[in-house]
Length: 83
Image 1 (spheres, rainbow, N blue to C red):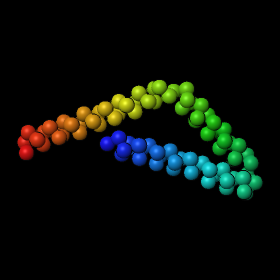
Image 2: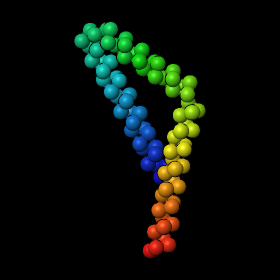
Image 3: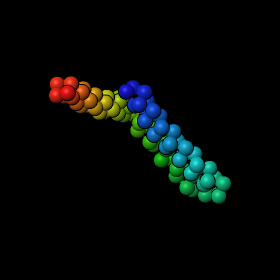
Image 4: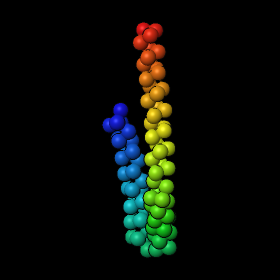
């Protein structure tokens, strides 16, 4: 299950990074500097907020994962009892 979580998180991160690089490259190539700087600013603010609230985000993700594991174990136990 940990491999699945890693795959999902890394895919989401890479997808977001690829989209930002593609947009940035497009803005630069088309001399849309205002849009490029706006995109860079939004990314910097996003990174700063993520760093600032890192612990809260990690705790939230742990709670989601723990809830998922409890549901999965509960379902397995229910199937074993009734199977």
